[in-house]
Image 1 (cartoon, helix red, strand yellow):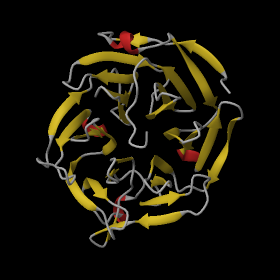
Image 2: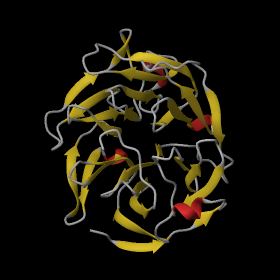
Image 3: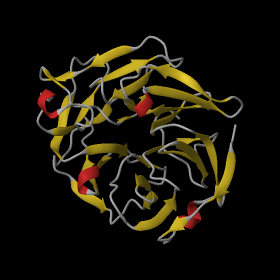
Image 4: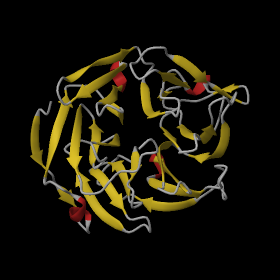
Length: 298
């Protein structure tokens, strides 16, 4: 159920126009408080968070929006696991949890590293070999309650007792994405207004734990990088103040797909994974592109 269509506004155009299949975008849902963590399900429907209302919503083309799950502990980023479950970062729950595709059977998968409570898991991705990676900024924990006094990026596999720390020198690690060959991990650092790239070994360990700065953002106001996705050609799409900032894998900036409100996160969707669903404050948008997104479960 599409509420309405509206023109797409491009900013700093340096090639991004060629990626668009339509000069209009769809408003899929609106009226929320703060949307986050969109994820397409295998049946083509979409789930996303209303983080500040503590709810997950389900959207479909025919039925529109309905509540999928309540009392989510400020659920944020989510991804599909190789076991078919939805794996979720709980911002206020300070853990990674999972549910069945229908929202039932909530499980806390883990909530500590080296015996210390995690800060506030934020976003999560999965490789094709089953390795998960997630970020752990302190957004959902009071300073006096923190057990980890660093903001890290972690890896884990189903069956591990605890995650493994990959990097710990971030200010606010946030969205993350993998290159199509899964040899490079991109991580947003919101407070530093940049994306860092880490080359990964086959086991998933960074060859350099500090990585390299891939892109920096000169926004027209406060609002650093948040969620991020990569297409099959390796282009990187980052939710930042102003819209979705798009880069070639060599770092060349292609421009901004504008959003009326600051975007928080995004996901590939549609029959060919060529649509981009974007959460932006109280709304969810869908842009039609002529490229295909990279998803490990497709």
